[in-house]
Each structure stands twice: as C-alpha cells, then as structure tokens.
Image (cartoon, rainbow, N blue to C red; front, side, top):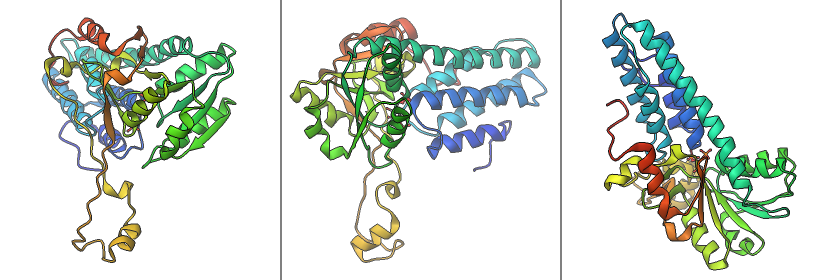
Length: 327
Ligand SMILES: O=P(O)(O)OC[C@H]1O[C@H](OP(=O)(O)O)[C@H](O)[C@@H]1O
C-alpha cells in the first residue's frame, strides 16, 4: 500500500490497491467498490471547511481513477458520485455525497437485474452458452433465464492468463448449470455445440466496438464464421463517453509474471531473473471487438445493435465531459 495523498482516507488507498492488484475485479464490481470508497471518504473526512472536503473527495477520486485504465465504469462511477456532492457546509456535503454513492450502488444492482431479464429473453430452453472470462452482467442473463425455468448449459473458456473462467464455472455450478470447461484454444472446436457466445464488457465505444477481456475478439470472429450469435451484456455504465469525441480506449498492459512465472522464465532462458535475458512477454488485458462481429449489446435500457449504441450514449452523457474530478 502506498502513502495516501493528503486528505485521502486510508480505506481509499487500500481499495485502490485492491483494484490495481485485481483482488477487486470486474468492471461493475470495481465501480461499486469505488463508490463505496468515496462514501467512506466522505463519512470519515475530518475536513474543517467545505473547500477542504471537496479537495479531499477529488484527491480520493483521482487515487481510485489511476488504478486501471480500461473499464470506463470506474470513471463513470467517480463522476456520478462527485456530481452529487452538494451543500454549503461540510455536513451537507457529506450527507449528499454518501446519499449519491448509495443511489449509485442501488442503481447498479437494479440495472444488472434489468439487463439480465432482457438478456434472458434471447436464451431459449435448452440453449448452450459459451462464456469468456467472468462477467457479472453476462451471468445475470443466465440467472434470469434459469429463474424463468429454462434449462441452460455452458461451455466456459478458461481465460488465460488469470483463469477467471474458473469463477464463472464455480458460479454456474452453484446454480446447477452443467458446465464444460475448455482451454481457450479449444473454443473454435466447441463453437459447433454452442447456441450463443455471451460475454461482458469493460467499455463500449461510440462506434459499437466492445472492449473486453483479451481473447474476446478472436472468439467473436470465430463465432461469426460458425454462425453463432455474439451477445454482449453491458450496463450503460460501460458506455465510454470520451469515445464520442474521437478518444480511444486505453488497453491495460499487465505484469508479465501473470503469463510467465519467474521459474518458468529461468527455465526458458537459462538465466537468472535479474539478468537481461532478451525475452519479452506481452500481457494485454483487453482487446477490441469491432461492431461487425457483435450481434447485440444488451443493456438495462434494452438490447441494441452495436452501431446504434451511440444514440443511447448521447442521451445519457451529452456530447462532452471532463475528468471525473472536474465536475
Ligand atoms: O462488470 P462485469 O460484467 O462483472 O465484468 C465485465 C468485464 O470485467 C472483467 O475485467 P477484469 O477481470 O476486471 O480485467 C472482464 O473483462 C469482464 O468481461
């Protein structure tokens, strides 16, 4: 854990560290944790003036923002909470901020449940769904289908390097869904047994591109070739407003040790870790799936063809916005 900036509560720093190290992960879960951390910052702040309170909140938002760059749910959450910070006194500011964070968390949960109902309508009784990584939005669609009495089976991709497919498999087994776990490279072979590819998203760009866990784009290309529809489950908090003005989404590059353990590295190169061994490991956490490979983006506001998502983005965000703390 680093030293927190002045005015920032230690819990904000520890939440930020947990997000950066992926002890807290998944775009919606990250947003929820960030809102919670801002609420705690507001509650515990010992600021003696409204200005000091506001500046502590902004510093906290910045600390949380600087953890992982790709999932836009994080800055969208921070912006939403800070925009609700209102009042003339510290206690008014505190109450309004906590209230706003709670509203955000409630809405997030509600949106996921609504999205699940909509996504479940695409799933028929007896369908087989292929998943990639672990997405609570995607799982919400399966949960709603199960609640509607449909039988659903799943082919779950392991999802290297961190194998979040195991979390998906565990959740599905808890719900009694028959699961076939496969390595990522087996996806094309098993697409012939699948009725849907169902994934989540970390960000959706204005042109309908889907930014999600590395491997999604290859899966979508193969699914298109095999005639399997690709469904993306993404609450509107995953819509990336900056992409309306031409900005691109930063793709997070993570530690190479997630791909190759130090002893494996030594085994390959015959050299100690500290030596210049000439071996480069690249570990991008996400990739971009173009809209032409996506059949539907399912949100709590309904399902959209990817090309029309920009209409919803304009409605929700307007045309331009600044950094989360520039509210
Ligand atoms: O918001 P929910 O649907 O839970 O997850 C959305 C996406 O967040 C995850 O990223 P990471 O594991 O944090 O790198 C995955 O890419 C997943 O598809």
